[in-house]
Length: 256
Image 1 (cartoon, rainbow, N blue to C red):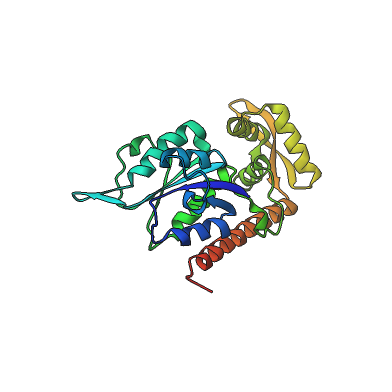
Image 2 (image 1 turned 120 degrees about the vertical axis):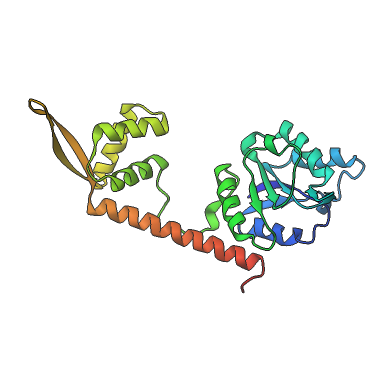
């Protein structure tokens, strides 16, 4: 389980519930400085830095901590920790959740962040799950799936062919190389793999020009096995998302 440093305002009333969500739903180990007795001789910023260095990533909870006029801002300690984290973690390992109505002075400089409301957390949790997964912080071993998740490039081609059943080899090759920065050899290996799995039907289409037949091209469509593969994958994804939602609701105490 990856360690995720949690930067937050001290003793936020919803903090422990959120910590439980991270552990039970996201399969990460949240690290809160106040839970660790060691290194109390250090100043608060240095102590936070000490524990950050033991973590795989950092999540900032930018909440309504201080008010100036009619504007809400996160606590100064969280703002300071953002600067420290920029020196310790790459962008892909720094995550931000911004409570609705919060104004952050350097918000324009933040990477992508998730907006949330404590009273309606599920949309934000689903988005956070995707973000942590993309940053390779989440261990999905505890989530049930009915089939193994296929490789990204294989799934891309399956869905591309399903959406355009008369796709030509040339068209698919261009899409593949644009998406994955690969070459025609990589594409050919993937097509051969799909053929070996009996996922493809191969046909041909005649291209006509002003003076008759111009050329004949090979077109692909999904076989019944290919369509079954795609259907099973999508069913598994729906089941996985439903399980994530259920675990989140249980962690928040909204259902038993």
